[in-house]
Length: 327
Image 1 (tube, rainbow, N blue to C red):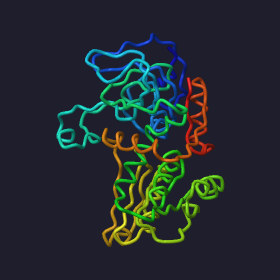
Image 2 (image 1 turned 30 degrees about the horizontal axis):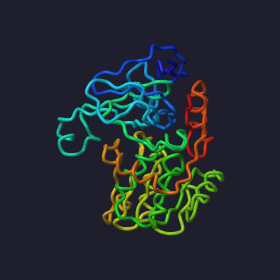
Image 3 (image 1 turned 60 degrees about the vertical axis):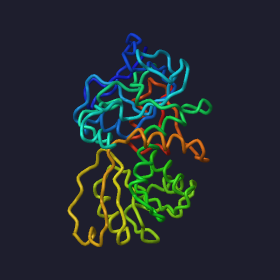
Image 4 (image 1 turned 120 degrees about the vertical axis):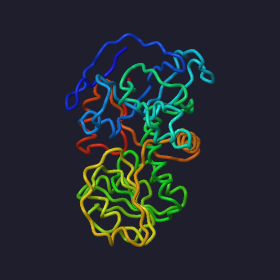
């Protein structure tokens, strides 16, 4: 098999030839059809997430076909299409797992961070954290659902019953969840990188009610703001944009420092929260919902060997929608 491997942070991925792995008990071996390139992968490669298993094969938006099953695995036929997300395993017995909050598990494994991921022709996944996917459709357009879609879904859920929503940062997650929110009858305003006319036009093309730079006020006060850009300075701006009792939800795993802001921005029962990982229930909900919606998925495919180019394009903001590696 071939894999793109990170040997040390802040260095390019390198191609490695490896033996095709055998699944252990409770595991699947997948032939990778596609793997999304997520901003979290950038945080791993750029050393902003500081505890990877090295060397590591990144990638946690995996669409693959089952090639082999380990002992004790049931419900997965050879050749079936499955998806593998960021949360790759949990302990099952800590207080968080015992209270239906496995996304906060004390001893988890994360795909592409603490266990090898999908920047490869084959990968091993825990069957309990693998999810059936539609047999039809392009694998490259399904891959972003496994993180951009799932984290976007959890972020939207934590916003509560908001009808007017601002989305700060219009990348892969935003382009999916904006469409979901609009199809639910919500009004969405996009806040993009100042001066990025392309991102603004992209948001409007997907049905956003408005699109403006994140340094500009929107046309109306918001019930909730969802922040997907890893920019801490957006937090006080988002708090200033929401109504009394509104919510600001940070959807990323890493963000630059949040600057000081006056308590008046938080007062009047505004809420500020973060999203951590996801639960399997989140995955089952969203992966059941997504095929029923007329989502316009924007995915730019790259050959596996061009993983570094895909990461660079994401880092430099040269993409609309998602980047996807196709072995």
